[in-house]
Amino acid sequence: MNQTKLKLPIKMGYGLAETGITAVQLFTQIYLLKYYTEIVGLNSSLAGIALSISVLWDAVSDPLMGRISDQTHSKWGRRRPFILLGGILLSLAVLLLFSPPHLTTQIGKFSYLLTVYLFVNTAMTIISVPHIALGGELSFERNERTSVFGWRLFFSNIGMLVGMIVPAAILQSLGDESSKENIILSRTTAGEIVSLVILVSSIITFLVTKGKDQTEKKPKQTIPFFKAFLSVLKNKMFLILLFAFIIATIGRTFNSAIALYYYEYRLGLKESLVVINILLPFFLVLLFSIGFWVWIAKKIGKKIPAFLGVFGLGLLTVIVYPLFPYGELRPPLIAAFVGGICAGSILIMDSILTDVVDYDEFKTGEKREGLYFGIWKMGVKFSQAFGIAITGFLLDIIGFQNGVSTQSPEVGFRLAMIFGPGVGFFFILGSLLFLFFPLSDTKHIQVQRILLKRNQKGAKV
Image (tube, rainbow, N blue to C red; front, side, top):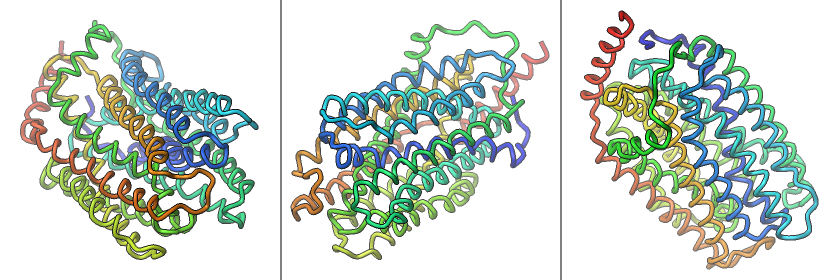
């Protein structure tokens, strides 16, 4: 059980894989739906269904992947082999996703998107679940864990910048941003760059974390998968944290999926202008706010900062986005600055989950980081699938016309209500549910002391 302070290169090397993981996630969340509906020509509802099915499969496979990595015993460790394998597969999958062949029928377009996105999400499961579980095992010390997940979020935001800015920057450099040929070229080239990022970052993480991925020499007899799965779902402490995060993630999914529609058809702002002058500042502020949230969590604990950050983001979203005037850049830029500060609090949620895993080990005597993080990611994926599916249907319901350069004022107003109060409602609801989370910082410190003594006795025997 690692209690020593981790060296900075270890923490940075661990977090680096999140650059590629998040680059893929944001690249697909922001650009995929719009690309397949407006460029490939797939019906919005069918696109939403295809993406949702793929994400649902990803969700179902997450706990299984977590359990597999929990019980893997190899000379490379139990998490690291999957980080390397998943990185290679995900790199290949992204290349295929934004390079579809010429398809003429709706069923052909639907089938291709469904098949390739299933591949993307399977590869994502293989790398992301073992990676996040490894983060909870690098150190047993609670503040050091917060620092580890702070670096993970830091590189996650680097990945967000890559997945968000690279496609827009390439399109802007090509000139005519409305040209279908330019859009196709920008997405294909961006896919190649993101593919390289995920491949390189996963290899570096695999190499740098050598010796930190601990495998027990003599595996203990463990609970069968489905019994263990159900026992985790009976953990009320975990369920409160999980559902709070799921609800907030639905809001994040709505936000990502509909952002470009809102800025273009409600505010009249070009894609490259939005990405570089609004989304880029948002993620830069979020990036630099991480140190503040790590510091404040050490000073006053984790629960209150996490609540205030998510609640503040929800309140901001509900109030301001329906009010922004057409064609003006400054108001959404100010909102992006404030929202970026609030959004940095998200790192605390992953850190709190490691505390719940400690409590589970205290109760059961079994280390099940992979299963817990797998179910955690499963819940997140279910919420993403729900958000993506509803987004596709909502675009049809509000009267959005695919392939039309201008939309009616009524459609613009409806987009604003979805992007503002619709998104903010989920942030606020998730933060309020989180207030019922029962594990205090004092109680967790007591649990860690007991676990430390228990493991020291076991080592002597």
